[in-house]
Image 1: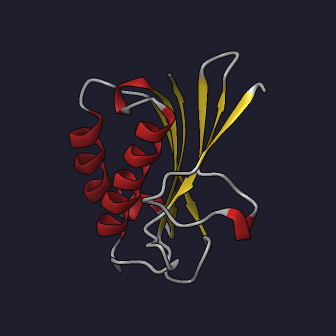
Image 2 (image 1 turned 180 degrees about the vertical axis):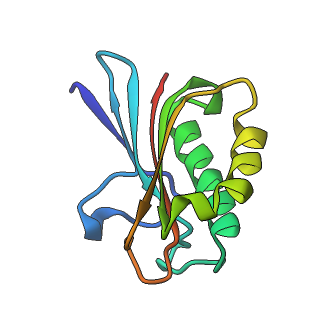
Image 3 (image 1 turned 135 degrees about the horizontal axis):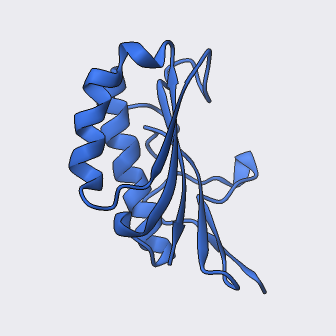
Length: 131
């Protein structure tokens, strides 16, 4: 099989949504991570701020990368969706990203959106990494 489905036990069950938390293309060694949000095992957010949800989504991202056999250092691209006007949150978001990413410095795209997976969800992060 050319693809490996990644669904860490520490993350919510994606089957009802038809998703895996990540898929590894075993031929190329590329890891495609589904949008990670601040959801617990019961699909509930634990923070109601952009900063808090960003930190929690990044923690979830690292869990998924680790389960796939990758890491933050191997990130190639991040796509960060923030509900509302992205520019209003950049001052708070930038230091959080810089602290986690350090020397990894992947390509990053930030996008302000009208809505996400639930009314309480403020941040979602997609990623592409190498093994």
